[in-house]
Image (cartoon, helix red, strand yellow):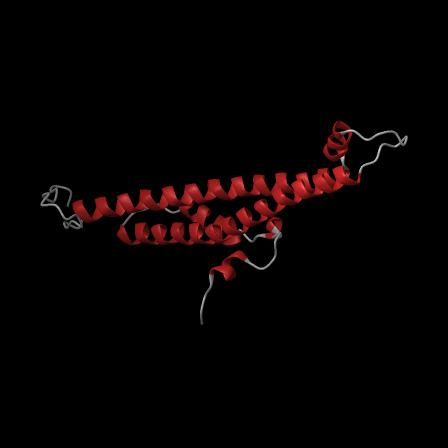
Length: 168
């Protein structure tokens, strides 16, 4: 079955980001916190789990960027619509400042701006979780490399660096 980029981004312009399922990501983060890296197999499992969590978040981040772009455009188009439709209530000449003010205080615009703020806040949360998972992956990778060099006695490096001894 062919997998396309559009499958990751979804078909809606505005994703229901508040209902993204982060259960598996939180389970991974909990495991990373609770499980000790006592041997190579544990370290490799933690490495894989952190990458899995980062992969899940990557899909959500793509949808968030799309949603934020859409909402930013929607704020601008809603402001423009309100501004163009505004007429002075007393029938006098409608100035540009009055139209700008009407767009800035419009409940319609405010509603879209609140959604946009929620989307940006949600993206920030996902960004931070992604960073944590990627840093954890590299941390466990470093531990695995150290275990291979010292305890298991072999090196994955391409240099002629001697394998440390005395840790067996």
